[in-house]
Image (cartoon, one colour):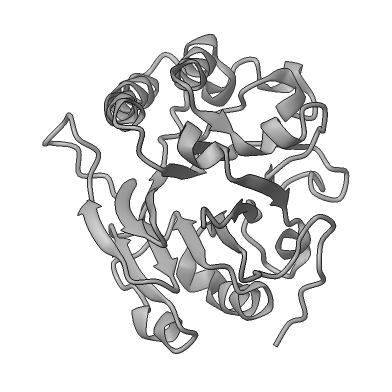
Length: 273
């Protein structure tokens, strides 16, 4: 078993808190041992996984570690899953608004007393193509249920790979991303519109001036030189933001052999009771 070193700002789950993590694993089959080792070491209450890249989901392996699971899979591409120590009630396995959209990018459940939504938002590259238009439409569709949750004052956590670089501080070198779909004005404006509804970016709320990243390209030693971007986020409704205690980026899995190009983000919430 590979040893994963503890990262600053991270504390094991405690009885008075709930910890929810998100991680784009860039192929669960390729990174299964990393995920299992990380779960044993960190023991989050809930884990959101994105980019599973396969139709087979190893629910039994997670069950042996004490996790219920729900997954939406797709051959070779996309795929999202939620693991939880608490029972899971599934509300939706597809983002509303387009019955012909077959991409496995959305999973909405209730677990641990929260509405938990796992998203793998489209990348959108290259700009000027249907892929970019699909990204913008997907974000517009996502904002519809987000408005409903705000109106209903539900305790909602939206986590996952948003494929959005919200601000210049969220990338090593802004000029390198000017022609990328993740950095376009239309993309960033939609993310700001989500915040304007009342959602809270958990990491940025606690670390307003910190330049930290969740993704580093495999090329040109990007991780070693910390040339990255922050695109994995947690957005919280006000009911959940009031319980926000910590949000930390755990860089240690990115330093392992054959890692995902993303690394986990861990959200810590105080128990409402």
